[in-house]
Amino acid sequence: MTVTVKTLIRLAGLAALCVGFALVAALTDAATAPSSDAKVDATQVAKGAELAAIGNCGSCHTAEGGKPYAGGRPLSAPFGTIYSTNITPDPDTGIGKWTEAEFIRAMRDGVDREGHELYPAFPYDHFTKVADEDVKAIYAFMMTRDASRAQRSRNDLTFPANLRASLRAWKALYFRAGRFEPDAAKSAQWNRGAYLAEGLGHCGACHTPRNVLGAEKLSDAYGGGDAERWLAPAMNEDSPAPLPWTAEEIFNYLRYGFDARHGIAAGPMVEVVQNLANAREDDVRAIAVYIADRMRRPARQAKSNYEANAFAQLQESAAVPGTGRDAVPTRSGGEASNTGATVFEGACAPCHYSGSGLQSTKPVPLALTTSVNAPDPRNLIHIVQSGLRPASGERGAMMPGFAAELTDDQLVAVVSYVRERFSRQPPWHDVVAQVLAVRSEKQR
Image 1 (cartoon, one colour):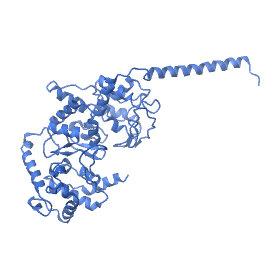
Image 2 (tube, one colour; image 1 turned 90 degrees about the vertical axis):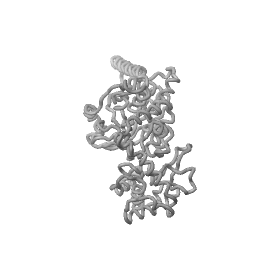
Image 3 (spheres, rainbow, N blue to C red; image 1 turned 90 degrees about the horizontal axis):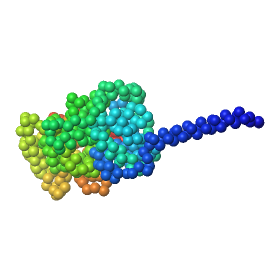
Image 4 (cartoon, rainbow, N blue to C red; image 1 turned 60 degrees about the horizontal axis):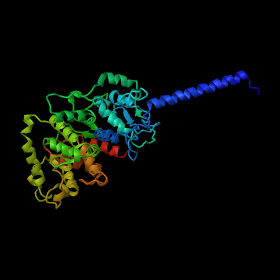
């Protein structure tokens, strides 16, 4: 085949054009990606680590058994399941090519590097309140993590949520960008706590109820919500805790996962506590001051605090079953209540009653726990089924789970009995449905 001079010229031109495109692409990536030669500010990275702990970043962006921050964790949404993204500095499947400005835009406006709208399972409606210097510190921290190549699973969402364009309408209705505005009438510590809780901590994302479109009902802020099919109890004056929380008690709970007048952290709160153990102590105390102020009860409720405490002490002072339980008045529940009492005496009483020889490890009185006094039985069902265990390698309270030992009917009976026996709240009426729902979730 004869190659003419004109053909050679055309091929040379085409080759030059390809080289040009490659050079432009390389220069573009070099302009947008963080420089590998950039000097790492250790102080900035350390600050970012503490802030990322408050934001619970690792929990949401790490799949069970997966590498830290590599994404893939399934997150329940009103219209299906969203899988968290890889936020390690891997250039292909993570955020390795993201600039600081692009990272800030995602945090502030819920828009990714390519301009796609982000689902609010990533709580940018809270992160928009975070100051520039704090977002930059988190970026520095993320860019110094180990890069992990991990392709994310496709979201499983129903129409129209599966169309990212629909998020523009959602944002127009519910998203308000803007930084945190301090309250001049409050203390510096209160404002610091409010800034962290409302922004990075995104406490309202779980503890505020949501509407049918998945937006927080801000008119009922901290009025109680859902977190991974657990009840996230109200953290305002409607808190179901029999005794009011003090700032010191909230600090104990957030920092150590336990308070002697309220109980032990369980469910999704375990990861929150583990993360807050890595945050600055004064920041955790500030969050506690802010939340305690939100949970301040009206005067009409405060007068019942002494009665609630006395009731709890009366309940727990009953001796080992059969030697003094009749000293405490209970509502009669018939045969189901008798079954519940039998299960409780066999499985629960050795630890939860005094006089058992386990005084050094005796749990918080059941009458004081939020799970027993909550508006629905989900949390108590989870705890009875799965038990309580400290984090791996850490000390803490432990309770065995009884999922394998109890039938559905027995579980319904003992949960109902504990509510009747250790609470002055009305009986739960949806225990059967909730037991079936929790059992079904555990089997998935």
